Image (cartoon, rainbow over all chains, first blue to last red; front, side):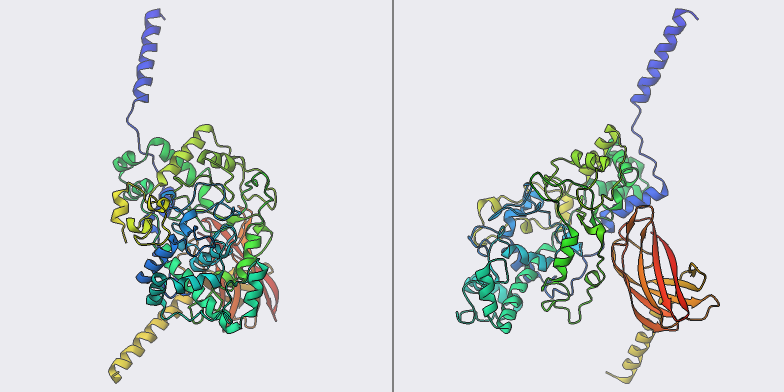
Length: 448
Length: 136
């Protein structure tokens, strides 16, 4: 073979390779099983909000307005400077950007987003509450968060004309807490010995009266939080295109790398074993071998959370549930066992933008670190890591991160729900700025 | 309310009840227990089965000859053999409806795939275990 022929063959090969590299991007072919998996993650398949029979005002618009005001109000805290929105900041998808929440003190765990949590049968990383409203009560009395006590809280609402008026519009006349012999200055069943002693000195009937008003505040907060659900993200446009078999729309919605990440997400990387359904969570408890943060003891997770929720007087079966004969299937048929040691609740993967650091104690800073963690599947410090090593290549890890970024979207709530109400007391500038400046048309279309 | 309206209402209620009973009796193909003592079939309140929703099953327990087994007691476990984990809930058989029909509450699946529901049966006619396989 002459040199000329070899040269021509080489040139022809180079030309063919160049044409191949610059070929138009092909939409991937999805098998029927993969199409079904993709559709199962599509927000279009998110069912209506589950009803909450334990909260009679769950879908009451006036209760949502009251809850919105309470969410941003600092008067319910011990120092008058902490609100729910201190840690659940709208601009950060209702989280705070810290490893662990910081209010009066430092919380034990990472502040999770509350967007979409109305769908979860369990609240908190360890599921120690079983409704949005019972969860909302807990920070008010946590010494590291609002640090207040229920006696002071109900009295604050009674004495603040604006709060009292709004409360009574929703729940009817408020009991009179002005008699100091019946209702001490500060009282609550808590780790504070003085508050606990004062609480025990009250009659059972008066304690119930206080608890009733206290639980109503949680129910109003829950009515607000139920309005915070995620809007469609770019992935959902893609899922719609896959459902229709519209290849051009698929090509224009996700890049080849993002679509490859999706293929891994529902396949080799086994993410949908836990991050499944339209909210990308099964709201179940899993030990995935995430290491404790330096200086932290291993987290007992659900094994402790189950004990706490069963003993919570504000749980589904408790006296403050509004259901006459509550059916508390999740509580009644909750499982026990060693699998729950070190297990924490699967978080949603929608809206990870601005919610780093990640994991239950903020152990990981980036999405790539999370993918690397699951790829490696290290031994758990306590309990048993359910995950198995994945043997992902560097390209596959990056593709998974690229796919996770297609799930970014703001909450599908009217913009006014994402900032402090105009006249809220104690709305500091940080809250006033806490509204995303630019919002997608999708989100606006979803306004409630 | 007029008698006609009452009759219509009663008819609607009866139709709804009948529909739900028919659905409840829409049982799976029975599985034989390990020692061959029993046949166990189920009807799910959720059809098809979907992930992440708590629901009830109705169980039908028969002897191998097809006769109903009454007065049985059950304990339920199971999980996903391929994933080495158990059920996310602790289902319990709470009610006996008669004629070998029982209500099992607290069923929930949190992953798609193959699940095994292991039902330990204790009855006057002997103890045995049946495994129901469910695909989601």
